[in-house]
Length: 64
Image 1 (cartoon, rainbow, N blue to C red):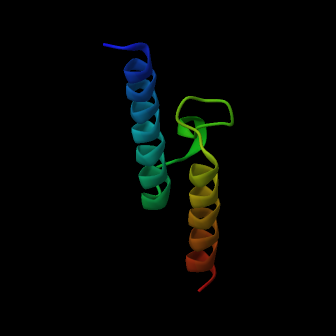
Image 2 (image 1 turned 135 degrees about the vertical axis):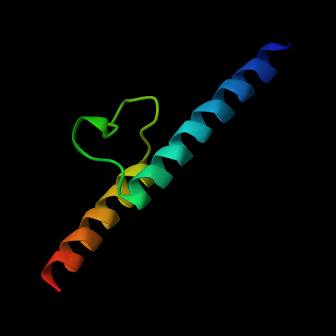
């Protein structure tokens, strides 16, 4: 496999992990030590935004 193809494959794999992280955060399964942190392989700005949105949702549900 060519070098460019290997790099693209690795990038796609990381994006898949990041997308799975967003789905996990949206479903409310990201808690405590399981949260990805900036610099982790699965962390992305979209994951962080999704996590924040989920936390706001949970606070809203608790107060209503």
